[in-house]
Length: 449
Image 1 (cartoon, rainbow, N blue to C red):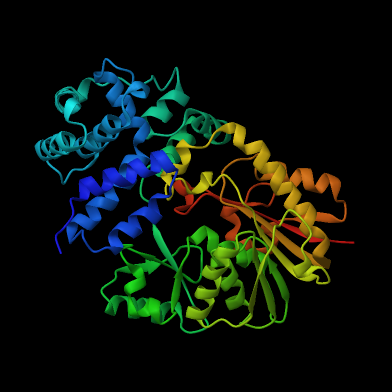
Image 2: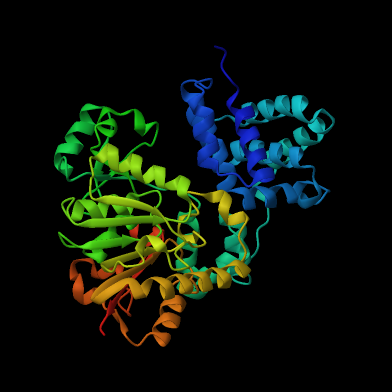
């Protein structure tokens, strides 16, 4: 079988993302599964796709410094080729500039032959004048500076500046432009963290303990983890450290009946089962019935028996739980995903600030619908992977105003060992630059009457 050019494959994936709003991880996994890209080229493909998406704003700014034609007026093929070439020139140390330019021009002659000369000129000119590229002034225009220098939408860097100040926002913007850590969670029903780390070392994987999660392990690589014998044996599942903390704050007990209302793909569901010793009942629900298959597959691989799956729209009453109440409810609400944009960098370019209020209204609706299924003295944990106040504190405050039978519990009192991760209101909020994990929020609500 002949091998495939990783740069051409990266171009094809970026093109599909632009045209179809597809997800980078799914397209990359599909391409690599064909086994037509070999050896180090597999890593290069992944680096090019994610790198271009993470640095797209900066790359377009550089293009704008050297192109007489506005970036948004360039043909899509030309724009993608320039991004690919410039990313290699400016952000990939292991690729010589001459090779980056030559390979990009070679690809241009195949895909956009009339523009190959233009692309060659832009790449070479940008390389020669890299020290003369101008950026917005940090003091006069911090929002624009952070947006261009670290490649994020300006509306988002403005939010970060409001939340963290300019210095904190810059630290966050820098972190959000880098690859995220790769974290797994031990299946404690079958092994311990120490035993799994020893097993992973035998399998050639360097790893270390997470700082906060007692069951988390950080790996020095992602690769095809599913091919590891320890994965096939159900000893772990992939889950970011911030996500691993939410079930801990829900604190399910053995024998509880728990509703995981927006459960797919099942990371928190299976962790809840572990915390309960695979006892009691866990109702794992999702609006997309196809995603329930992912939960079932993960439960089967991990050997978990206490989970039942149902299709359910969390915004409306469901026949599946019509006569059922729960001691614990987890609402991992659908959100903008602003806390995980370094994992899904394509998403930051398709979002806008206008998306947040409708999202928040949906989140409130979900809480309004699900709260009636909670037992008296029951616990509801609301969580998102968003950094936005509008999707977090605003949602909780809106819900509590209409529901005096609920109170927000102070996580600082309940979980003092995690105190640095909690806000002054007792909510959980993690920041990638500060905590080394995804941006995440959680509030714990108690039904008092």
